[in-house]
Image (cartoon, rainbow, N blue to C red; front, top):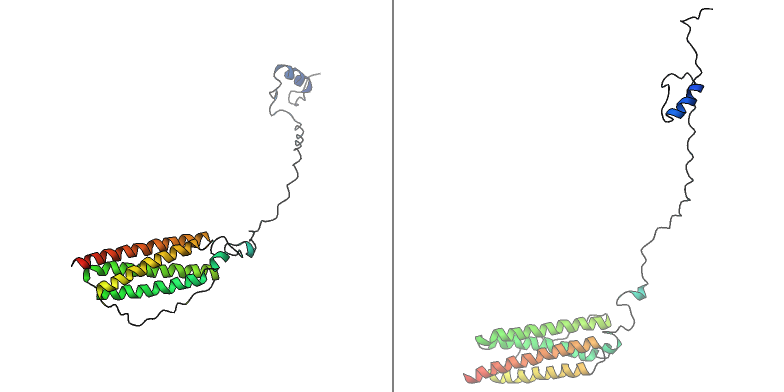
Length: 217
């Protein structure tokens, strides 16, 4: 019986597959010629994901209690109870510094021209002393101190006699500041008093040099 050449031949590719697997197992032996589509590969199972860590609650900025804020201590190491025992001394120094400032401004206006700049510098120092002591008073008490300084005219008198008087007053102020520094157990107040004491002694030295020049003339 003669074969029909126009009838498509159906081949059993399985036997050739077995041979090809021995020759080249990684290649497709008949690309595009298989009538049956290969079975879809099963999807590879992914490893299970680890459980998600619990989300921590949003951290809120912690505000320290009011009692722990700076300056809220009932008895701080500086400008506290020990310094409060010196309030009367502090207010006395404030009034004295402001009064000295007025006097040095007056003597600078009435004194010789060559001495005015040094006297105004002393007046500025006295104003600075008052400001620092006012700040200290507020640190201790939390209240502003209102000085009661007399603003009337200042009588200077004779030039050399005025310098002599101011020398002794400035030297005594230096001594009083130093004595107050020794009389308080507050370390910050003690240091401040010692600084002001050094300023007052420096003022006395300046006045001494002015008096020396005046007596030479």
